[in-house]
Length: 218
Image (cartoon, rainbow, N blue to C red; front, top):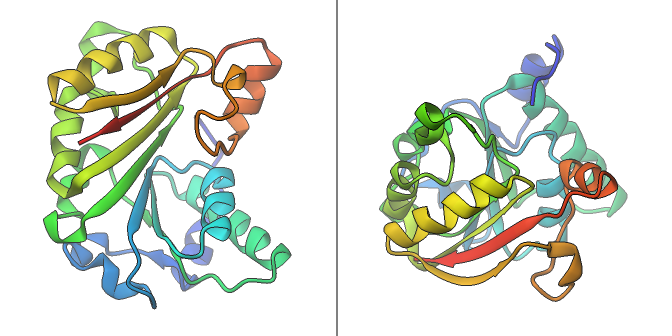
């Protein structure tokens, strides 16, 4: 998603207590940041923060890390988290944001971090064949995630793109993941998982586009 430059984003992020500007220094020791030693979940590509803010405030017994590459997005996510926690009258102590290139995610997360779950929501489908390796669900990326994903750790993935979904089913199997659940119409299966709708998801549903989703286990 393209977004206009926001001059306030960088200063606000640098001043935020839940933004990490030097993520490589925390490889294998992310859990030391959180006041409770709970399990850790990761969102790759948090966008404007609608998903991670709702998820984290709802599950105070889980520690969350959300990654994106664009300061403007992270700035909006930071404000969204603050707003959501304020509305729920809760302290922000179980979620962190950081800026990093997800293609090089292995540089900031390691085996000792033991991420129990990864969320990938509506990532860039990169439709042209020569760009497929950039997909966040491509085999090249999945192999990187396996390095820090805990044993029997899960990946929750959803997309509006038919081709990306079909190819991703192949990618997961090629990397030895077990597809535990899959659907080509998430809205028709309310018990598929405890779903939190993203802004993209609401937009696609209004356009009549079906949301595809899966849960894969390491």
